[in-house]
Image (tube, rainbow, N blue to C red; front, side, top):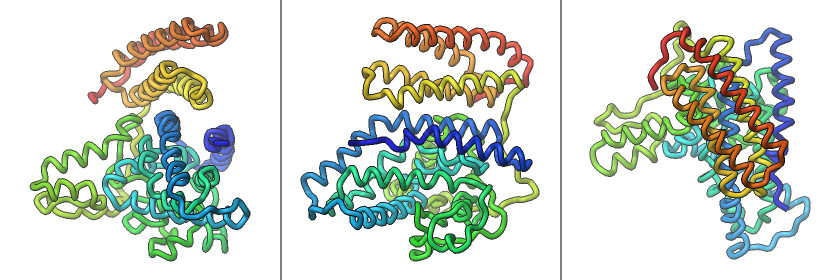
Length: 411
């Protein structure tokens, strides 16, 4: 039986985020910012939604190789589970390392590194498109003959393990630092300090970084994020901005060779015509500032309200995807993503917010009509109508606040 362990773990994720948030509040630690945390969680919701159909397709790719081309018939005993656990972690290391050393792969993986904070919400900040190619790295396990369900189980737990290491609340863990991936090791991995870049690619076991020369101990203070800050809460732009940069660089490059190398060389590589390789700059501690676009109290209230709606619709889609028809799934996915866009646009005071929000309300009305026509329960229809009407009313009152806020910025 195929079980989505990551989806089932979502409630636990939010409980642990609440625990860390309470700890940070009690200790007066600045681990969380509302805008950054909402942006991180938005990426997580979007990643799960975009990956719903692809997960099944990619799983069957592994399954097809196992069923037709496997080399061995392996038993399902404890030793095979242990060997597969090590194999999954080994190939995760190489997938992760290549995602930092090949521009085309980094274009997807960069999303996970964009936050300038480091807390448990960052663990949920996942690329929407990374899963479309990461599975290729694990195909040797299918050829060897490791059962697809065993693989899916252990790869899911490899991902789940990495949730708890996205914290600043846990410091050094003694002798475990030599064996497993710890919060300290992973803080280094998320650093934009030049000495920390492209280090500690481990999933569960840190031994791979120690073996292959990519280990770095946490020493001076870590500055989180990417070397050129995203400076946006837009979840769609976060997933495509580096692709846009690569495309623009390739257009400026001379010759097909350099155009291709733009996509396969490491981040920082440029053709000689454009200045050659550019190393990561040292952190300017004096002038260092985090991106912190925010809004008035009324804007923040509306953003949180809309985010909760997106979280609700995204959760329904995640757990009911197989039972809904394709049109219902598409409508809910579009509404969820457009709602997440609204949250970012409000905090950044984007000029296109108003027409986009009215279009979203129209989409919401069409979804209610679709629910009525396809036999959804009265409770679902009534709840949808109430939330939509409340959103419209709140937005009308909010516009006055927006008009008195600073001038809306262009895209």
